[in-house]
Length: 421
Image (cartoon, rainbow, N blue to C red; front, side, top):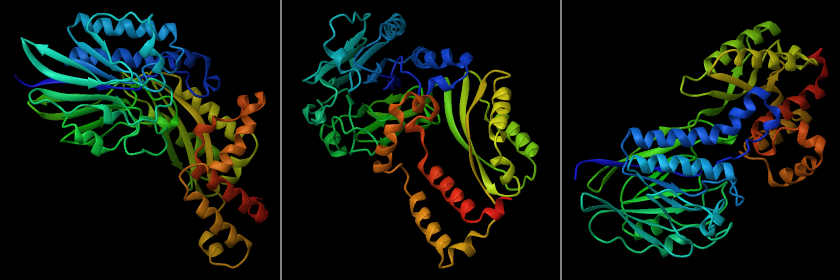
């Protein structure tokens, strides 16, 4: 048969609440709430436009075991569009939507196959009387699957393309729950041509061939830790040769950008530079918008004015006003002050006094990529109070290296108060 293609997606998390939704402008909230559905519609449009033979969905289509009615209705509508276009859909449930595997009320449109929990199912995709591909898949049966489900997959039979469909944590990827843990050796053992995985939200090809192993990431990012392009993979097939290509589906993107203001002496200059940065961050259609956290950096004369009460808030309000004045929009999530007074840090660090000791300790703290576990646990108590939940940024969005850098500058400012006057 001539070259053909299929699409691989996962982790749709339909109807997922965006982190810190209450902090956004009222005009943006509805777009944020609808973003996962808009990304699903773009995914289906892509399948239809590229004439995919089938769509693979590797778990966590829903955000939780509740399976919201809105998410069920929208998913069925979109999969019905695929069926009308002659495209099959194969689903394996993950740890977030494991209950869907046994939900009797999910009435799927034709051409939709759902992998059962507990045992690996096999499906054939036939075209023109010939078998185009064999798909093997299994769903999660509980919210914390510790078993190596990949070990249950049978060896690939000879003949057509063989694909494994699984929601799993490959090689104990850090920062993710170790559900259905497996290794590349487990996947290679089966002799499959392609493994369509879900669970890790960062897209990427983990292995290019024999077998090709891919995480598509999630089609729509939901917070700053899911920054950058989000989408799925279109996989071109020529015999047993595979070529996965990433395709963006997200309608709202997240970014963190740094803005050096060391050469600026007046606050109006910072406002002008922010204006340029907001315009540079504005995405191109069909994107709906972009959410950006700007971190102001640099040692310079404007540092003092930036720290004066009210100035940071005024800059943020003006940047948000400008970002919303046209579409696609830009929402400035926050302004992080990481500026500093003009001090000779190298000279301070080579000393033997308290300042040198503090700089050494804080440099070690900044080298840690994530918030230390003991500090994270201590901060959780603040979020138990209503005032904390309303006023504090989401705990999962905190950037530990930036916080440590800010703490360093604050300590130095208190050690050398004369530099701030």
